[in-house]
Image (cartoon, chains in turn brown, blue):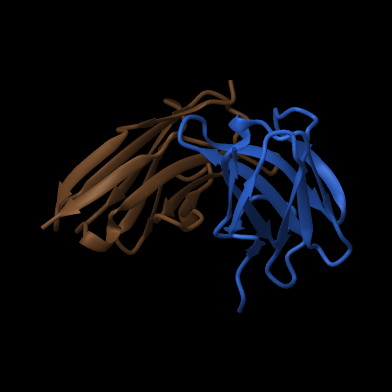
Length: 110
Length: 113
């Protein structure tokens, strides 16, 4: 019940396009849903996060959509840029413990 | 302001040895968590400390232990190393008593040979 499922495993998007990564969870006790971006050789960096009482949150080019009834949430990256090429992890928090998805390797091509 | 500092960055150990990894959180942060990252298992929670108390522990064997000092610095120890312990060990710190806004360090890359 602690699993967070993430898809796709890898994603190639053209520069200027929209990148979409999806996650699903099972444990309804999760109360915080962050997305992390990780570059090679670095630790994950918090990108954007949402709580389950909100259906959407937007910060710049990054948007989280949250569907509580379906237990799903997604990350949308608008106007994707080559600098966005990285691995993205969704996560869900319960009692100061983050459960991570398996990651999506995003590549933005010119 | 300085980020989360983990030392050493790289470490090579032999099976059966023990290792201690160090984490200095962002100044003022009192919560420190440790995660293991491997290609096969992804990012997995090890444990979390707040004000020197372990509040939460993941599903790892007792060979994995940690502690937090009064200045919030934390160490984790792995005894009797196994090849499968090879991983990137990440430390994350937060100001408050929840995971909101955890900042991760760059990690310690442990290789067990």
